[in-house]
Length: 218
Ligand code: DX5
Ligand code: ZN
Image 1 (cartoon, protein in one colour):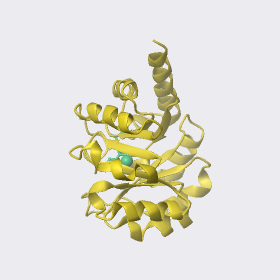
Image 2 (cartoon, rainbow, N blue to C red):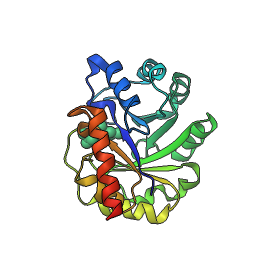
Image 3 (cartoon, rainbow, N blue to C red):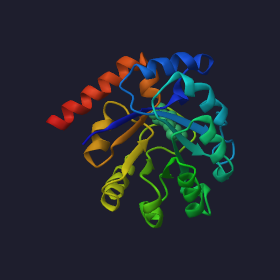
Image 4 (cartoon, rainbow, N blue to C red):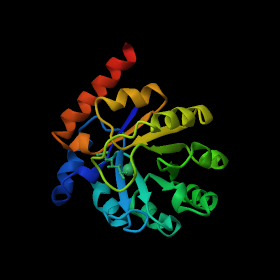
């Protein structure tokens, strides 16, 4: 299975974000994961569409925007015009999930749907035709550097079963030991924040790619 690497800039040095993007541009990254937090759906506030506009000229890689925000429908046009390629919204933040996903699609962007660790996979069943990606959170959203929640492995496998042709993305606690395990049960898009930025991102992602190749060959 062709696994995509989506490093998260949440763990980058915010005072030098251009350097981080330039490194990722030269790395094994397939997508760049942008963690948007609003201080309401999750306690921290990170950044929004203006950050996407700032980094868009620095990379050709798809910008994968993970919106951990309430009322994401109010932001879609701003993210589109800023240069986002993909928008993923949370089931838990969207009482009108179907409509929000339709809006993302109609705006010409790829749509994804995310579930927190306590949310069952079945919560996305009725919207599978509106998305090409299910994000199974493998930590509770809000912070980088948290430990991987083991129980989410079963959910990754369930997501793969109900959506054999979708991207199954995992986000939280992904490193050299958890990455092969999530891939083995069906994940094919790996977000990695603290792993990527706790050293040289180019080298870290190349090691991650190598470990995945070795584990798929064995
Ligand atoms: C957490 C974010 C993640 C975060 C993951 O709420 O959605 O994308 O960057 O960080 P690590 O890889 O450090 O667990
Ligand atoms: Zn994320």
